[in-house]
Length: 112
Image (tube, rainbow, N blue to C red; front, side):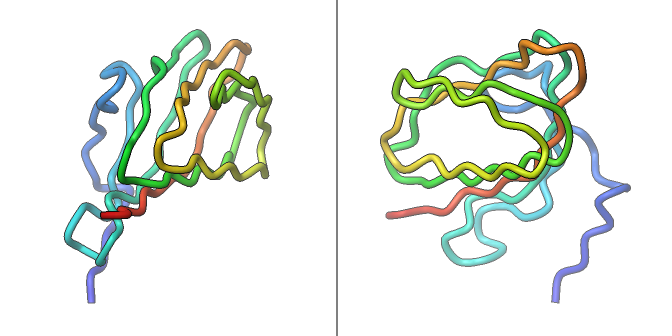
């Protein structure tokens, strides 16, 4: 068993933009093939540059707010309650072009 009191976790900067804060609930090695499971908060104007993961799927569930997810050049406007899966090798970025914070939970699954 692994119990995590998420309200006691230290906030870390996300790897693609250290000003965006995340909490990691599970890390690579905690559960087979799970690369990470956590949450993040994007303030208005924050963004993650375009990137890809060749050996990982990422799944994002929007809990609060509105955000632009750009996947392979296509802009998708996501709102609370939306869930998006970015497949391995897909170019993607996220931009909070709106006036409120965005909160999501997300996880990555290794394919290698």
